[in-house]
Amino acid sequence: MSSSDRPIVAVTGASRGIGRATALLLAREGYRVFAPARSEDDLNAVAAETGGAIEPVVMDIADAASRRDAVAAIMAATGGYGLDALVNNAGYAVLGPLEEVEADDFRRQLEVNVVGLLDFTRPFLPGMRARRCGRIVNISSAAGRVATPFMGPYNASKFALEGLSDTLRRELAPFGVRVILIEPGPIKTHFNEASVQVDGPDSPYAPLQRRWRAARRSSNIWERSEDAVARLILKALRAAHPRPRYTITAGAKMGTLAHHLVPDVVLDWVLGRAMGSAP
Image (cartoon, rainbow, N blue to C red):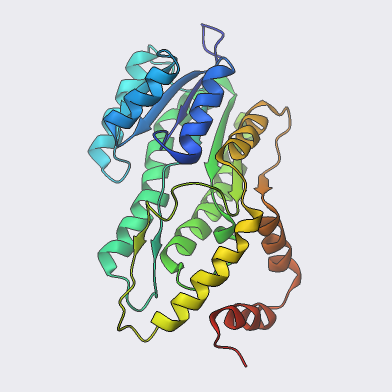
């Protein structure tokens, strides 16, 4: 732990949604919280809400130079100590048929949700390894366990994050650094507002997308709040022996169970019915 006896944590994407709720909760619980995110105005608003307990760090996780500057700012502010914990929450979704998603949009999806996440994490690992203590909490999704239609880029990024996290967990375990995945299902956030929608009215996929969106809206009965996810993240940070994965919402738990127990051909049929394309 840092010399101030206040655990130091960074929460990426802290200007809104799950990241904001988590940064606010950790600040109330006595953590020294750094909040890297793109919007300086939103970050300042979050910091003001806590009387300055949250320290804003402007960062575009899709930009390598911005990531390096954010790491340098945190290192300077902590006298080279770094972090006791990192919550990798920043991310967004590219939604639409894979056939119609532009290559640049697909690349940016992976850059933000996977490449940028790892690049921002690595500079803090030497300090954690040297102290033989640290927590990395990666915010994944139920979409990282079950691939659903018209979410292909997002699915790909979260499947990649699952594998990346499993590998990091096994590589860092001998050094006392724990890597934890949080897998939310439907959460009351600005998810759709922050998404890139590929949705042409003349697309042959348009009728299927409309039916699929309607089916997804019906899953909102399982929605949980951003604060519920924040509390789960706090639990993972404090647990003496954290689980590799924490799944939240009934929908996410059912999806994980289906991933393990239901044959692909059955899942294909169920999802096809939701799109109105299965017999």
